[in-house]
Amino acid sequence: MIEDQFVAPSGAFTRSVPVRFSHCDPAGIVYFPHYFDMFNGLIEDWYTQELGYDYAELIMGNKYGFPFVHLECDFKVPSRMGDVIDLTLLVERIGRSSLGIAIVCHRDGIERLRARMTTAMISLESHKAVPLPQPLRDAAEAYRQRTAQ
Amino acid sequence: MIEDQFVAPSGAFTRSVPVRFSHCDPAGIVYFPHYFDMFNGLIEDWYTQELGYDYAELIMGNKYGFPFVHLECDFKVPSRMGDVIDLTLLVERIGRSSLGIAIVCHRDGIERLRARMTTAMISLESHKAVPLPQPLRDAAEAYRQRTAQ
Amino acid sequence: MIEDQFVAPSGAFTRSVPVRFSHCDPAGIVYFPHYFDMFNGLIEDWYTQELGYDYAELIMGNKYGFPFVHLECDFKVPSRMGDVIDLTLLVERIGRSSLGIAIVCHRDGIERLRARMTTAMISLESHKAVPLPQPLRDAAEAYRQRTAQ
Amino acid sequence: MIEDQFVAPSGAFTRSVPVRFSHCDPAGIVYFPHYFDMFNGLIEDWYTQELGYDYAELIMGNKYGFPFVHLECDFKVPSRMGDVIDLTLLVERIGRSSLGIAIVCHRDGIERLRARMTTAMISLESHKAVPLPQPLRDAAEAYRQRTAQ
Image 1 (spheres, each protein chain N blue to C red):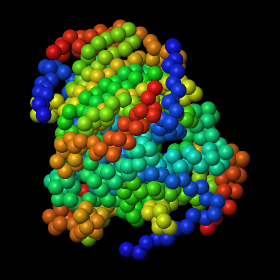
Image 2: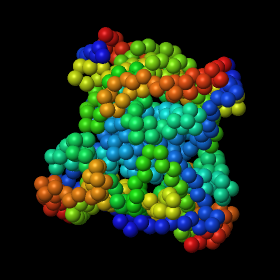
Image 3: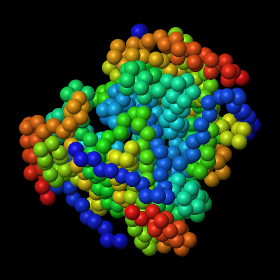
Image 4: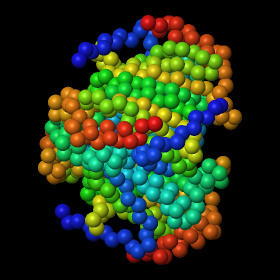
């Protein structure tokens, strides 16, 4: 198998996640839905720690939601209990009310899986899409530009 | 929004899943990784109940694994606590050691989400891909043909 | 080890749950938090199917919550992928706004684990305990009596 | 309600956990089985970071398991998305092959929930209890003594 190399762009938002007993299945590797849960946590942290928007407040206070509209994922190298994996978030596209995000899971310079996903911003009251607030859009665009590969 | 109609092909493997409290997030809708867990359960049941292969035995007894290689999903209509959703499995492609499966989540004739995924068959001992056993391949192919849309 | 026999009382609410791949950990047995998720699902179904109260409607419509106040559990026999386990719900105590429930997980007449738990009924608006509505109390009490061991 | 104060003993193993969107239910508070998953993670980290035993290696390498035998939990104050909760592990009892552990979840000096649990050490090959290795026992006993309240 040819391995995919991955080096996170300078300044990209990366968090390490220990692969736990509870993530793993009887085959000893991460049960795949847990990756999506990790990704959701990474997006939360990116909003809060990188963009400066408190994700909990956006949802519970401002009544916004960020449902997934589309998701695709290539699984390349499995991860085992005890591994520490790095997750890097990249912005691929900024729409009127949507964000196209890629999350790369890697370790030691090798890409283990890559997901591309589109989230929408909606009002939890009207259940309709709302335009990204301009400051949030600006913060996401600035992040996109400074981490473009 | 234009809704996508969906009618499961005659003879297609469909199971109903009640959307539970535990599936739902603070926005009151299914937290998306739970769908993938439901899909894995559906595939398990399809092997066991439709193809006649005991999925637990394949894994624990025969030491085969069925990791996901690729997955993509379009989320169209959210599901709420108390909904009962129908999941239908369709076979799209049969490779040497891989299966291309589509799972459609629908209710009342409307498609709510659709996932397309590729699983490989591997040996849990060698961690290498193994060819689908001929009887399993034949069973999957027969299913594919009788449920082709 | 001396095994504990268990025979569900006549008329007791019992549901079977297949132990899935996703329930099991790298040791090949059910990862214990999944039992509590199964128990929550059983309680949901008991309200809806046995007592005649739509659990989703109680929460989403009437804005009631049923948080756990206390829980204890003895784990006796592990369950493995492919097992089908039976869960039986028994009412042990009915308080002003609380229910004392036991859930026994068993198979083939052998008790595998037993949990005893207390849930409160609260208003999701005031976050305070509310008295069990009299018809709900009556239904729970009737169930308790007809399934008393 | 009278709140329970909690101050972790000096030197006690404490880790902070952010309460995430994915932990919370439609009532906006942590869905209780997630606490048990957090506890399992804390125990993992305690073995590895405090006692100096690589938990993944104990399980995958040495084929030991640490199933729960008994668990009880009092839920006192709910936690909401965006909260950061502290989890402190205390050793209450060391048996031949079992550990009695308490985990206190607290924030700002207030106890939110407390679990007491007994784990056994077993061989994953014989599925029988094995005595705690003396160095592990010693490390656990030293921890117990230096954090006794």
